[in-house]
Length: 171
Image: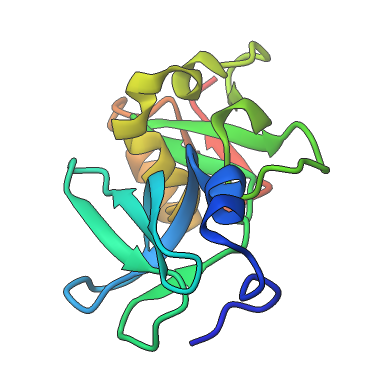
C-alpha cells in the first residue's frame, strides 16, 4: 500500500499535517474501520509511523508506507446527521481549506436536532479524544422509519437520524 501524494513527505511533514487529528484505520484484529486520534508521528523519513489512540485508550503504531495488513483512510467522513447519546445531531465542517489534514475538532460544528446552539464544546477539549462522538461521526448509524418511530415512542431518544440529511424527533 502506497499513500498517494504522501510518499514524498518526510516524518516531519507528516507530523505537522496529521498530529492531533483523526483518521480512519483498519487493522487485522478489527472487524472494520475505526476512528483513531493521531498523537504523534515517529520513525524515520523513509519509514514513518503514526502513534494512534483508539477510543478505548489502546495505542497502536501504524506504519504509513509499509506493505502490511493495516490500512489508513485519509478521506473525511461524510458529515450530516449522527445519532449520539440518544439524540440526533447535525455535524458540519466549518472550514473547507486547511493546511492541517485529517479531522480536527476545531473544524466541526455540531447542532442538536431540537435547537440551533453550536455544541462544538463536545469535541473541542483535549478530553474529547476519548469521546464516543468521533466513533459516531466516522460510523454513523441510521434507522428505518419504523425503527426510528419505535425509538422515539420509548421516550428514550430525543431524535433519531434516518439518513445524513433527515431525522425524526419527538418535538
